Amino acid sequence: MTDPQDLPPNPADQLAALRAELDGIDTMLHDLLMQRAGVVERVGALGAKGRVPLRPGREADIVRRLLGRHSGQLPKRTIVRMWRELLAGTTAMQGNYTIAVCQTDAVSGFAACAREHFGALTPLRVHRTAAQAIGEVSVGTAVAAVLPVPDEGETAGEAWWTALLHRDEPRIHVVARLPFWQQRSEGAPRVQAFVVSAAAPDPSREDRSLIGLEVADSMSRARLATIMAAAGYAAANTILRRVPGSPVAHALVDVAGFVTEADPRLAALPDLLRPAVVLGAYAVPVDGDTA
Image 1: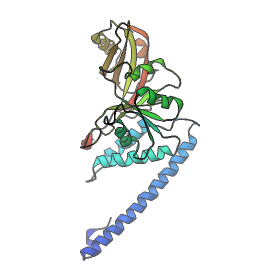
Image 2: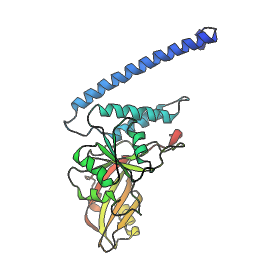
Image 3: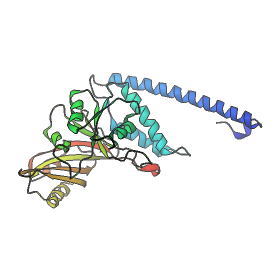
Image 4: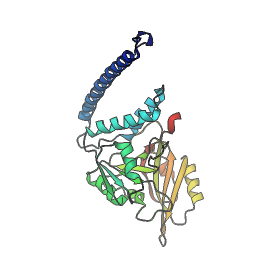
C-alpha cells in the first residue's frame, strides 16, 4: 500500500498513482483467483466420478471464517456476495451446476433467492411445484432444488418434505437454508427456502438438522416435544401435519446440531409408527454486518 507521504504533491498525479496501485492489486487478485481455480481442478480430480459437486457446509464454513477475520470499511455483505459468486463459479467447474426452483407465482421471490446464493449467471429452471423441482434433482438434470420452507398451513401438494420420508433412491436431502445472509436490504428477496440435493449434507461448524417422524394421528404437540427432549434433542420449530381421515400424522422437527442416521438417539424415540428419518441438515445462516 502506498504511503500518503510518498504520493506526488499534485492531486491529479496522486489520483493517477492510486489508480495504478489499484490496477496492480486487481492483477494480483486475478492471479490468486486463477491459482484458486487450479486448486479446485485438483480437488475435483480427486473426487468420486459422478458425485454431486455441492458442499454447502464447506462453503458456509469458508464464508464464516472470512467474515470472522474481516476488518475495515468494506461491508461484510460484500464479502458474502463476492465469495458466493466465486464459489458458484468454481463449483460449476466440477460438473453440472443447474439449479431447479419451485416458484408458484411470478412475485414470490424464490428464483431471486436462488440467484443470490448460487450466482447471477448460474442456469436456473423454474417450476410451479416442488415435486417438479425435486424431480429434476432425482434424474440428475439439476444439482439442487430451491423449495419453500415448510409451514403448518401448507396443502398436501405443498408438503414436499413428506416424500423424503420414503427414502427413495436417489436419496434427496435438505443441504442448506436460504438466504445464508439473513439481513435483508431493500429490494432483496425475503422468502425463506431450503435447498435439497442428491448429495448428503456436509457439516459446517454450526448446523441444524431436520428429523422426519411418522406418528399416530392422536400424537399431541406436547407429547412430541417431550419425546424429543427426553432423547436429548434441542428442538426449535416443529411441524405436525395431520391428514383428515388418516390414522397417521407426520412431523418435521428442526433440532440443533448435525445429526446423521447413525445417531443412537434416534432409536430411543418412542411412540413412532416407523423409524425416524434424518431429512437433512443445514448451516445456520449468518445475521447481518454484526456477524
